[in-house]
Length: 72
Image (cartoon, rainbow, N blue to C red):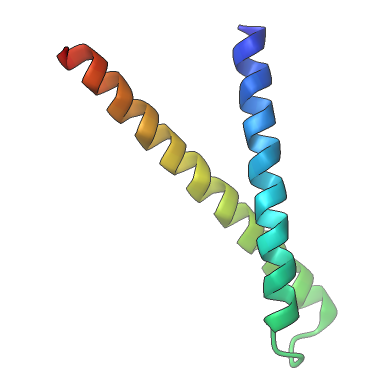
């Protein structure tokens, strides 16, 4: 079980790093009309959305894989 948890933790850390990279590029293209605190909130929410979408995609892939194994 600890191996599975460790694997999930590593995957989540990768997702967070990926989201942070996207966040940085989004920050550079963001209009200057937003105040700094609003930019930080927006970028934090955007990173959270990216991570959640990645987790959802992973869950869907896992579900499809398990359905294929059961069908065989």
